[in-house]
Amino acid sequence: MSEKTNLYKSLLSAKKEMEAITKDSKNPFFKSNYFDINKLLFEVEPIMQKHGLLILQPIENGICKTNIVHVETGESVSCEIALGEFRDPQKMGSAITYYRRYTLQSLLALQAEDDDGNLAAKKTEPPKKTEPKKKLTEEAFKNLIESKNKEHILAALKFREMNKTQRDSLNKLLSE
Image (cartoon, rainbow, N blue to C red):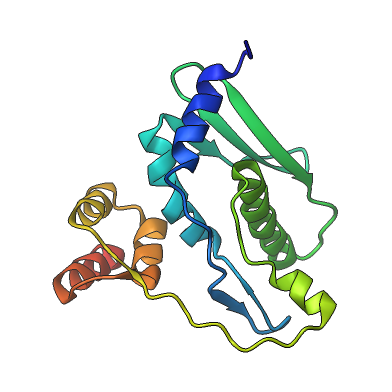
């Protein structure tokens, strides 16, 4: 038996609940789509936490890492990419965000539309319909209010359908 049996069982259970990630954010410079790191975390963290899994994304010695830890046993799995040298903090920040997104996607083997491959092949396809926003459930709304996590609140406001009362309450939390 593997020494990471509990981790793998929990990851398998979590993955069964995950859907493909939609690249619905636009990069006007490269004229491509990508999935936002906040949306990615908003989608996967609650599922991971439900199964006793913690996502950590430290930067150590010039390496951007993503670790998934089974909280009960300490078993972990990781993916990492060297950052390289950056003199411009904004470029470094962009690289960190990019690497965080793709190391997590890689670890979870999340499906995503490959628009980079399509651009490289220079195929012209008709524009795809955007998926409707998923409704913010009462439970998710309650969790957002309790956590007061501004990144998650911003992601919810951007990617979730909600009623005016929910939207007003979340906007009020952001302004505090």
